[in-house]
Image (cartoon, rainbow, N blue to C red; front, side, top):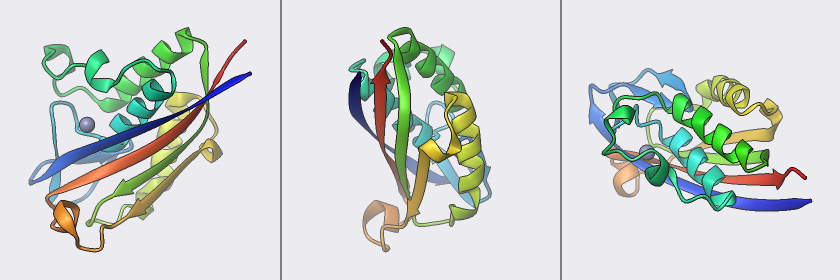
Amino acid sequence: MKYKVGFGFDTHRLTAGLPMTIGGVTIEHTSGLEGHSDADLLIHAIIDALFSAADMQDIGYHFPDTDPRYKGIKSTELLKECINMISEENWQIENLACTVVIQKPKILPYIPQMKQILAQIMQISTTDISINAKTSEHLGFIGREEGASAHVVALLKKKQ
Ligand SMILES: [Zn+2]
């Protein structure tokens, strides 16, 4: 049995008036995340962690933001495509550990719903995906509410 760990990271700018989608869940706030797709930084970091573990390049390689097909696309759709691609290479997800770093708003209340949506897409148990939320203690661009980041570690198992 072969196991591989992967790491993913993403950052998006926060802009007033834009919608905020994190982990497939719409979050009520005065500002939102800016990007070519729906800018769901948690899902982008998850996709990068999965591709990283499978040694299959990254999100920008498979879903380039210069491709009009991906303009405004829901990141949940990208995650489905990513799961299909790694499954074709016989990779199966063991577990994911995620941390979202955002100063405001508090995303803790949304985490159970994120876990449910993501676990369903990835066909894993909600107990195999952990999501933690942190602030940056008012330091740097995250502390100034100019942006937010997500960090994800994924463990994959190669099916024999
Ligand atoms: Zn992104």
